[in-house]
Length: 149
Image 1 (spheres, rainbow, N blue to C red):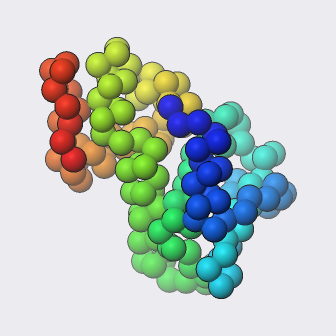
Image 2: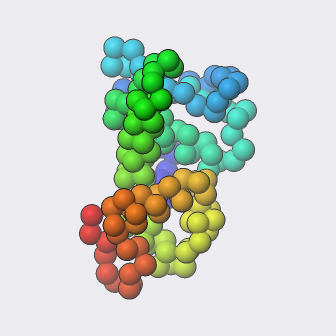
């Protein structure tokens, strides 16, 4: 599980400042201007701490990858940027070795992993799909064998 302070440090390293803001139409958004980023979080939109963590991790990943776009950008560009932010979020905060370790400890269902990592089940499912389908890793290997990435 990633500590909130680590995520804030990553935001700072990416040149991002975090602001509470009542967005209304979404839970979080990132704005870039001249290499500086503002992450806006609408705390009224989060149902639980896991939703907040994932939103912050995702937005920090937009900053770290430089994948921001205009609201009017074509869908394919938006989709590519969202994919890159999600991929970075997964690789950084849900690495294969951490998922494997949790699974070896008995957390095998997505809902169990979500509770273990304090993240939404959707994020866990996305990470499992990424590591197993896109990267071809087998997370269900014997104990004492490590995942090689």
